[in-house]
Length: 143
Image (cartoon, rainbow, N blue to C red):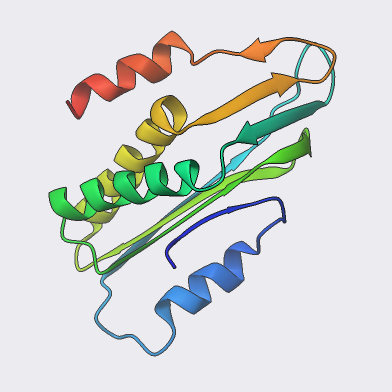
């Protein structure tokens, strides 16, 4: 499966190796790894989601990217649960014959994950985190 929603950490190198193993048709591989930033209210964030619904939403985002760009493969991992500052939270990997498609598809996926993926984020000792205006504005270039 190319989409995973999981509590466990992930190994970027292993994910890249798994996607490219035995393939000589990939011309470009673009990856993005998001990390939990330090927060004013503490050093932990808790992500909640609805199992089943979240995976379907991420699969729809991936399907949209595959429809817009020539992608040979794609991998999306998003974590949930308590995550400390510095922890890996999201991973996007796109493979394409050409770099422009791989770069644009990875940006598209991240823009939609930041604003449309059904995750609820709460800072430890603080309140719920809303989508930032800049994240919402980034969607404008794709709509």
